[in-house]
Image 1: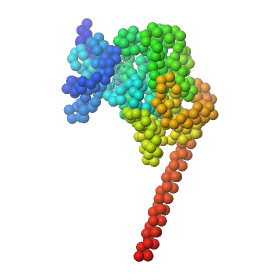
Image 2: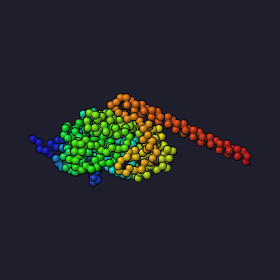
Image 3: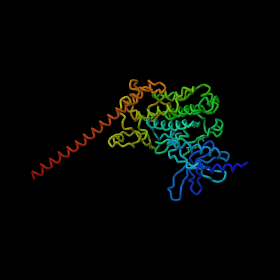
Image 4: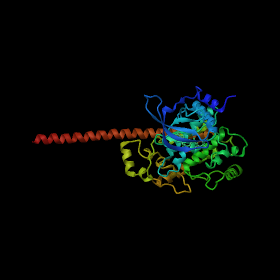
Length: 428
Ligand SMILES: Nc1ncnc2c1ncn2[C@@H]1O[C@H](COP(=O)(O)OP(=O)(O)OP(=O)(O)O)[C@@H](O)[C@H]1O
């Protein structure tokens, strides 16, 4: 029988995972975080002596027995990384016969877990919609290959490109309740009740449950169970008593969906395909998730003079203010931070305006909830979206006509001035 070291080395040599040599890697000594079985560091990777050096993140197993887990993770990632919202890996960095590191693309905006607790960064409902769509498309991608992520949580959702692009990491590393708790990484709040109870193993609907909790976390920026601090309490609270995170005073379009995702009956939960459809619609309604986020006080982002400037220049890169907040029924909602359209128990950052919030609460202006199981409601929602799209196009056309009118007026003004000058010169 092969010795463990030899067995590991044969795994390294597999053609499935490229092997990266030590002279291609330069450590930076910067720690990026720790997980259950490993730790992650930033490094620099030079694929060839002539190519440009790139920033990478390397995940090392915390001890030798986890090396195989790391290699298994690498294999899963190699097969699934074709998706834009899944972390790419470059290969396995072989340190010696028994130790290795998983070399992945570096995500420069940390994880969603850090973002949620960073009060210096405000985001909008558009960002929420964009992140959720990206997350659900990655999950749908796994599910289409009959793969389950099993460990969807804000710590495994990484961001880059000024917080606009979201990618999933950490695959196939099924974190048993016990091991999660042993290393003190907190309670597994996104784990579904049926898995907690041990009724059944993770299945696709368990991933959907996690999506529901993650939705709630992004909307509220709070801990789902602030008074629960042990695994036993969590199981009792969630699996035993069927409790869920606190009610948020947000649009029922959102609350209806996350409640369905975390429903105790997995049959009621939507599929990942439905989740993608839902967030595609939501993103259409809140289309400014591509606005880059900046670190800074909320007031900087919501500065009204900047907003005027933004409208004038038409720039797309201004803070968190979206440019077309005048659409009836949604007036101003796009320019609200997510925290401003819900009422969490923790004080939220001040909303840019208050009248906009009340207009959203007007029941006559609320769009119907897109319940994808109900074809009629779904159709009404789709029609509503089409109308909004038409409205937006008309608004854009109106703006183009106005611009052209202003241009003509400017020319006319110039002509007038020329005439005056001409007249003056004739009198000389
Ligand atoms: N590619 C990456 N780029 C930047 N930071 C990363 C990258 N991968 C991981 N990290 C950081 O390292 C932390 C630890 O990652 P890791 O995958 O080891 O553990 P985890 O997902 O937090 O926990 P567990 O493995 O227990 O599920 C992450 O939370 C993240 O902050």
